[in-house]
Image (tube, rainbow, N blue to C red):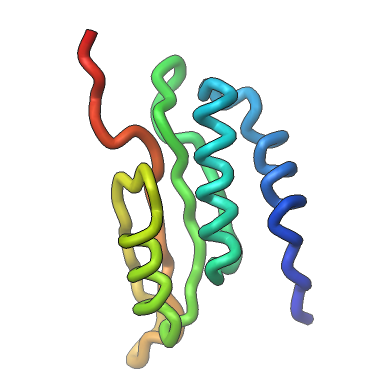
Length: 116
């Protein structure tokens, strides 16, 4: 049974609601949730979003999802070239002996430490 995708605006609203006590300030959280919603619309399936860091120093979000192996190249290209505040990408293949799908973890947050 296939599930219907949630509209992007509804996804953003629910994600903001779920992460409101994550320790990120509102402006930063809003920007990171918008970026995560963009990843959702790019084709991530079974998407999960977590705060990155340990309170009180939460500095970003970790987005995990599954991509079809056929679309991996184009989606990764878009992530690398178009995603602001990208900290890292981790890819894990699923399927033996032929890769059917790929688990992708994208870390979002500050790109440089600011000194006082």
